[in-house]
Image 1 (cartoon, rainbow, N blue to C red):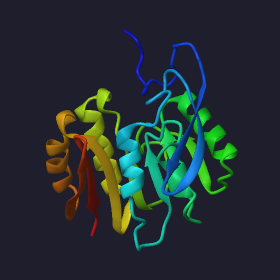
Image 2: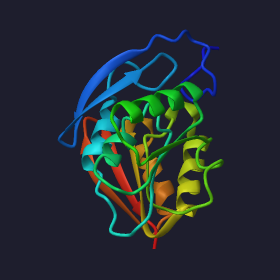
Image 3: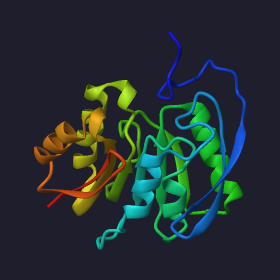
Length: 199
């Protein structure tokens, strides 16, 4: 069976590519690679999540779960002095995220290996964002939802992008069992941007 982007050590040959993207009015350079989510181009869902995200009013760091090469976390870090943590299980993705952090000059980004939020620092977050690993299965995605609900400050926000045909309606239902408020922020091209607030 070929490995997926949520594999710790992708066996597929490394073939790095550089891509440019304009996000939130800023230009970014990313290096992507085989064995990493959305190789060679910026994923539409990630782009929508980046553009729709609004920083919460509460203080605290931001976390990007399943960060890949940093397409979500880097543009957010460029707009804030808060610490932004990037977590992924994929070692190749983490190395790319670190390289992309450095080439884009973002000193407030911390990159760490973690399966979801299981191996993360003992701290709470003001916001957690994710473009979840759908191919890993619903149980993994819902576990990330549960971990996020436990790791937010009061009035903290969980932002997720998910396609309708890949389970957005059931994801919204699951979030409603974990959070005080769940809002459909935007629907576009079959993608749902959901925001869940913890009170």
